[in-house]
Image 1 (cartoon, rainbow, N blue to C red):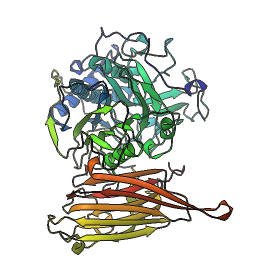
Image 2 (spheres, rainbow, N blue to C red):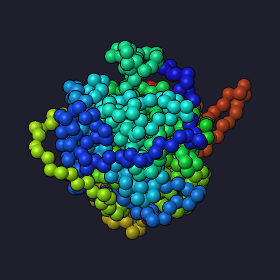
Image 3 (cartoon, rainbow, N blue to C red):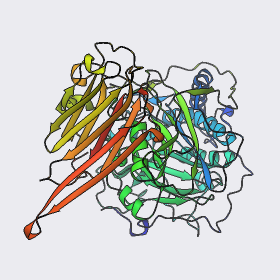
Image 4 (cartoon, one colour):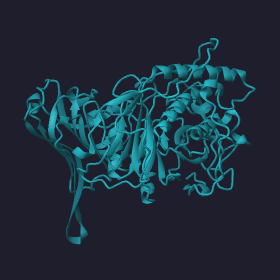
Length: 606
């Protein structure tokens, strides 16, 4: 373990800390320069100015989608707090290349995205959000094939127990953070002050372990003399750094070192203690198991989520996780395209608002919801205010940025403004999808008013599906089929899983993507039974469902239950029979997917 003894307890409180005064506000990006950018670097300033223009131009052409149902003019009551989760695609990203850019170029790329994040934060503040969460890799994108390629984007982030007697640092106004080596950290701190809310963002951290700049004595120092971490940072309304968390489970990310998995929490001025997680952490025991054991029921989650529609998406997994753990989840991912998207604000399985991008072009969306300070337990068929809307209002970002015209500069290398789902270096996760055992319906089974039963099995997993097609359903296109898929084994070469999925398919074998469905169901049920001679059901059983367009099924129309029957025998031998069930009752809606996704927790993954 590479743990500091002093870092094992990272729970911080807000009482009696010195103020980080706001007499020096965040410099608006209209100046084109990074906040307090080093004055001795005119070439750096020119590059930052150019990329700010790029970012502002792209911003002016983009629209901001907002799901319905939140009253922007009514502040949350004392029993709730207002949270914002952003589905954001970086407007400028590092190109996939092993050749590093300069620090100046890296600053320009990150500043172009900081321009966007600042305007989005202003919009959230105008809607009276008290906390905002941004996605993983939002400042530079995910395309780094080597450690050296990401290095120019990294900054020193102090430990929380450093800098003053209360263990706090305010980078916005601290002279130790005045140069461009910590420009991102400083700008995020100033952004939280400027808009007076708690801000959760993702950035890269470097910790030297060799040489005169060494800041850590952690064991296992890499050969290049530095640890590089995918890091969540949290700032309070006064710009203080509340917490930082290192991603514990890496997903094809050779540029990063794995975090130590120690749970990190932070407390806010509105009386809520949050736990932190990043993307792939959601599928693994830690840090979530320890956080739940500590009594944490509110979570800030940043991701660059990889969708495997229709079986699992960012929004369906987030909703299911919130339901399973009876927790509040503020989940922010990227709005890049159908492959990478999915954000929302959830409470015990109820999606107050959610964003999903089913298309090919990037889309910006923000979900806002009032969450209870203490989440209520999930109950089958529980009806609560909020729900999820399949439609979104379009809203232009507030305070549009205007920049002076600048003389043209030479084209910049190693920069992209869009991302291909199949960019070089990305491992193709879908190569093993055919490992499912499939039972397929035909068109006659989906005619209006018909009912059907399907069975599928693989290994110890037995799957059952029942469905009723509405009499009001349209006649089915012969190419529209549904399958019941069973999996007991390695999921996409990542982790062991046990899955039962009743899902819409676009082609034979379910190898092609689709987010559209036309069959209207009145009822659908999926059940999983594990062979009684094996271990019980997976501990993390995510019950997921969505309708055409990848719109989440409302909590009021779904029910989820698990049961385990243990029959004792002589000599204390036992047989374990587990059964899980997910159903959509009185649905009268299309159905894209209804699945039980059980993660078998063992450390076979990356």
